[in-house]
Image (cartoon, rainbow, N blue to C red; front, side):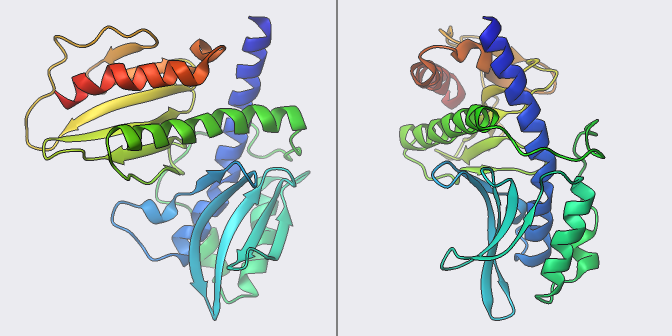
Length: 269
């Protein structure tokens, strides 16, 4: 149990740091990528094979470029469409403000407005107490803890897509920093599934599964399924089911699969 508590603490710390770091990818997307009404142009994807966070592709001058963050190197890498590194900026041993300044200079050399890139985002993220301190490169253990849990989140979102016979895009949203997927499996329901950061609802990171009415037909929770893992959270502000990561010490994938199968019928009604 002590090792699990330590692992979860390390995960939460890493999650907070990469939440802050990733805002530079969101700024790149906001500045260089065509705007989408749902703000999805600002989000990114965690790829476990390369251990990178990838932003969106952007046309800059005569180049097609994507800003990524390499977790192994702890550096931003601007990739071209051959996945070659066009430019890189280390985030280790510098504050995020200094890293942003250096990255803005690299982008300015390509014709991207430094002022536009460095402008505040249109949303707020938590005020992290370490935000003004130099960031340290992650140890291998810290990186593997974070990537392992986020890879589980990716796979779980993929399972939901398959279970619903849907094709929602699996992305990380820069505001709340959840790995999530949204689908509309029929004309009456929208379903949101993913893994959220530590917050007051669960006190730790957790999987969530919630439903939204598309036709003013309220979801009936009076005969909700009894959950083997996790629990229903039916408050004034949010209704759905959550599965805290502390319940996933053993047989994590099996528990998430059971969670998905048990929650889905109630949400679909």
